[in-house]
Image 1: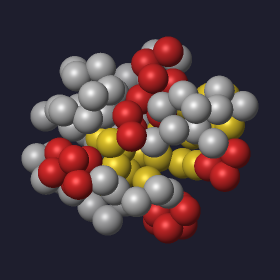
Image 2 (image 1 turned 90 degrees about the vertical axis):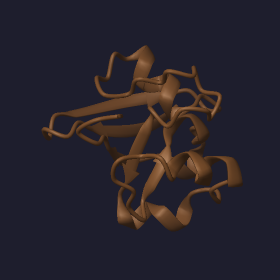
Image 3 (image 1 turned 135 degrees about the vertical axis):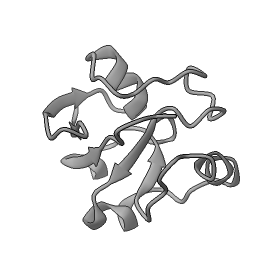
Image 4 (image 1 turned 135 degrees about the horizontal axis):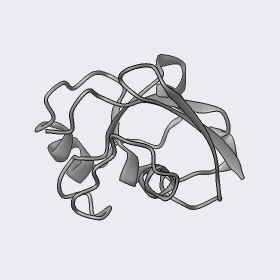
Length: 106
């Protein structure tokens, strides 16, 4: 299990043990974390699972694919740590990862 912390835009934290290989989007939905809409079900086709990765974790993540980059271009607020949680899989190197949710996924 990999521990991931999701922080809602209002500051409420959710620490979740995520099975290795599961996407952060799926983990958030399985644990009823509000703010991850995931309209496309994890197909990297909607950007409604947008999260902000804490600065100290950005360099440790896999590179953003061209498709994810294109989807991130449509989010309301894109920051250097913007990622789609459907594209991030839990793995041991991400144990302790902290992501913050935007105020809106629209």
